[in-house]
Length: 578
Image (cartoon, rainbow, N blue to C red; front, top):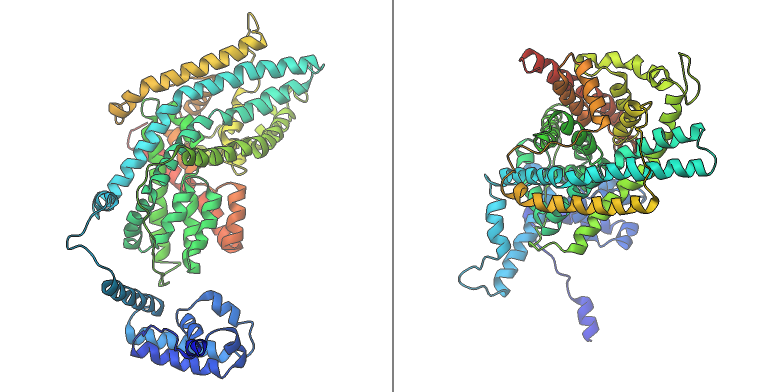
C-alpha cells in the first residue's frame, strides 16, 4: 500500500506562470500522442527543455521519427511567449525557479537579525566595486608584469651564461671526441641547435615567474573576480561577459583559449570570441617583448611589456565592438552566470603544479617544434645561393634563407624594419612565436668568430661555476626584492648587460630605420602582438570556427598588424619622436 501511494503521488512541479504553463500543456499533449517520445523522455520535462531552446535536446529529436511537428510547435511557442513576456523564455523560466527556491529558503532557513559579512564579502566590496574593480584589475596586472621582468632578470643572465658557456664547450668537446670536430656537424649544433633552442630557453625564467604570479592570483580566487568585473565592461560594449574567460586563458596560450570558447552557448558568440582571442598576448610572445624592451627601453622595459598586453586587450575590445555592430549585428546573447569562490591562501603545491605544467609545455615545445625549425633554418642558412662559399661554409647573407627574406623585406620598410633578418624571423614566427627569437639568434649570431679562451675549464670547474652563478643570481634577486616591491614599482629599471645578439639587433634596427631604432622596435613588437598566431592555434581556429572564419582571422590580422605598425612608426616620425 505504501509503495502504491508513492506511485500515485503527483510529481513536484514548479508553476511557470499562466502563459508559459499554457504552452507547456500544449506541447505535453503532442508528446503524449507520440509513443516514441513519451517512452524516451518525461513529457513535461521535454516540453520545458524545448521552450528553453536546449540545443542538445533539439539535436536528439532530429533523429527521432515523428518529432518534426513537436519541434515546429515548440518554436512557435517560444516566439509567442517572447512577444507576450518581452524576454527570453529560458531566462524567465530560470528566474521562476530561483524565485521558488528563494521563497522556500525564507520559509525553512533561520537567519540572524543582523547579517554577517565574511572576509570574502568585505574584500569583494572593494575589488568588485563598480568603479574600482577595473582599475584594481589593471594594477594587479601591472604588478605581475613588473615583478616578472625585474625578479627574473638575474636568472636570464645565468641561463644565457650556462648555455653559451659550459653547454657550448661540452658540445664542442664531445663532437671532437667522437671525431666530428672538423665537420659541418659542429656548425649544426652550435649555430643551429644551441643558438636556436638556447636563444629561446634563455627566457624560461621570465615565463616561470609570470606563471607563478598568475597561479597565485588564480588559486587565491581573484581571477574569478576579474572575470566578474570585466563582465560589466564587456556587456557595456555589446560583447558577451563569458568572452572574457577565453581571453584570460589566452594570456597563457592561444590554443586552449580558442577551445575554451565552447563555454559560450551561442554560435555567433563563439565565433566572435574566437576571432578576438589571438589578440591576447600569449606566453610565446613574451620573450620577444622582453628582448626588444631590454635592448631599446632598458630603463622602462616593464612598462613597455605591460603596454603590449594592454594594447592587445584594447584592440580586441574595439574590434569586438565593431564586429558586434556589423558582422554580428542583432545576434542574441545568453546570460552569464558564475559562482565566486571564497578567497583562500594559495598553496605551494598548487602554485608549483600550475607553474610546472605551463613551463614544462614551453620547454617541451623548445625541444620539439623549435628544435626542428632551428635545424631546418640552419640548413637554409647553410645552402649558398651566391658568392664563393660552400655548404655550411658560406656567408649567411648569401644563403637561401637570406635570399627569401630579402624578397619580402621591402614590404616592411614603411614599418621601420626592412632588414632581412627581422623580416625572416616574422615568417618563421608562423610556426611558433618563440621561433622569432631563435631565428634572430641564428641569423645575427651565425658566422661570428669564436672568442678565444685562454684556458678551457674542466668539467668539474664548469659544474662548480654553474652552481656558484645560480646562487649569486638568487642572492641578487632576494636583495632586489625590497627595492622592487617598496620603491621601484613606478621608477626606472636596471639595464641588462648587453649581449652580442642584443648589440647586433640594435645596430640592425638603427640602420634600417635611419636612426629611429626605438620606434622601429616598438613597431616590430606591435606587429608580433597583432599578426597571425602560430600554426597550432590556426589549426584550433579551423576546428572550432570553420575554414571561412579562419581565413578571415589570418588575413585580417596580417593586414591589421601592418596597419598598426605603420601608424606607430610613421606617426612617431611625423610627431618628431624619432
